[in-house]
Image (cartoon, rainbow, N blue to C red):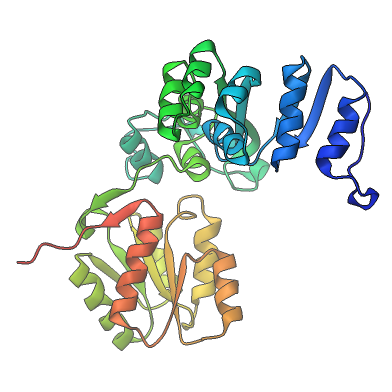
Length: 348
């Protein structure tokens, strides 16, 4: 095996360095990442003359890999003649074998896992719990989720027609390619991982339109009664049911009771007792609330405070005094990122 390190100080481009390797007549050529047309052409030429070429491109899925090579400048027909397969890979966390327990449709009915499973029409087998072996995460190790597109004669014919991405995807699926979502949900059915983990990595749950009263109440946490009243008016006008707490400890107690399935937490940063930072840390350390959307309210306009809160797990940040229009826009944006688009309430 021969390896050549690419060094731009030699005056040779990456494509020229690759050509030096090809001149040694290898059986297999690992070309690294294809970033430009010269590199792509040399890789294609090596494949045409019978060399096995392994290369990478940065894309989100297998079909996008073909599109990337076409966008670089390779002709679809020529590409179809020499390309054998495109493999795209994602990694998801595997359930911890020490603590994962069977999913119970009755007791777990209010969990996010159950809601995601319902949207996707799948029955989960196991649920993440958390223990010392997995540092409380419920997961240990990783498993691959591959998407494999084979260039069959049928796919080569499709490529000759210069298809768009939708046509490529449809042709690949008709030819037997299984998408990330299909492979990932199979892993859920086998009990290897969870729907939540597949959704976290792949983002496969479609955005749905809901009325605010259908997505669960908002927990509003602030020791200032005037600020709570203003925020409550905005949320109730949007159609939300609002549950109030005056400090972090009361909010934590309300969540732990499990009487409500909260869709969002809006909390003040500076409160007596357990403040917003401590409550946020608690929420993000618990498996049951680590994905619960959180908006933090504060009187601080310091960009460093904003950065620290976002790094600690806040989904958004709003500086007081509360502006009704901005608060409503932030609530809609945070829930939209969580997969829910709030429909405007019907005028009475």
